[in-house]
Length: 320
Ligand SMILES: Cc1ncc(C[n+]2csc(CCOP(=O)(O)OP(=O)(O)O)c2C)c(N)n1
Image 1 (cartoon, rainbow, N blue to C red):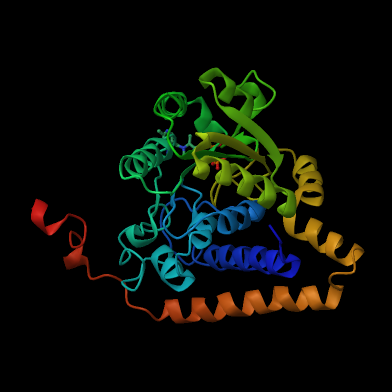
Image 2: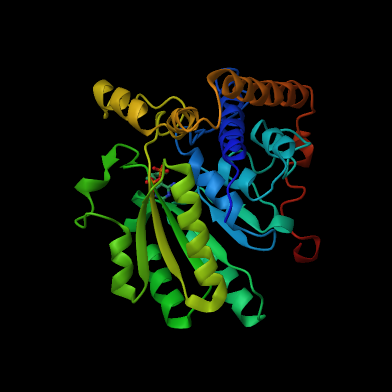
């Protein structure tokens, strides 16, 4: 696969600028509930975008914005959904934790551990229908200690389903470090218990991760069975906006930010390889910010849903 370095960089900066626009809605009470951002985890979004077709399915988590963008959900509709507007993807009824785009086979759930069972269902449907698509179930490191993780990997292996389990190991489940609740040194090695291959990759190395994830998806798509891939990364902000985040040392956060920012890491690489210069890359950053700020300004003048329609668009008409 030939990667376009400046494109990878641009995708990451757009994702970050999108997330930074979301941050603005919390102090203004335009966004309710616990907003979870993935700042620092952008390389994973890029890897998803490169490997998947429009028909593949992605089932994400409470930390889902990049995954939605990577799956082709229009940023304008996603931002409006996060800002609870009638123009949003789900007309403002889903909010930041439940964006749902059936046309693009994208959904998310705020229930930890619940993404894999839904992805398993997609994978089962693809297999029954003889379709060449894969389903990606995304979970955080914390979710991998839920029963659903183990049950789904077992079922996927037994039924030989086109399921890719993508673990975003950002090292914490809220305040709980992964090492305190998991005895294995990697999460992916647990795949062997179900007869599956598992791989751990550096989730902040955008090129390495994009290539590794694409190879994994290719193998599963070709009938090579389910796969488990773990991307290591670090959550830069609190678990949610407003989290006091006192469980991580300031020095740890500072060090990880310096070492594990996929965007600044890649900026240095591009400059060192002569594939970009500081000025050109700063212009890409500025362009991404301007794009998302312009989108935010538009969204802010969109109408909010009328409270009298709170139950509209929730149930299928036939089911009422
Ligand atoms: C079944 C369930 N239990 C608890 C919670 C509360 N909760 C929300 S996020 C979270 C931690 C998830 O950690 P991880 O899976 O590592 O994902 P991360 O937040 O690090 O991306 C918990 C316990 C929940 N949403 N659902």
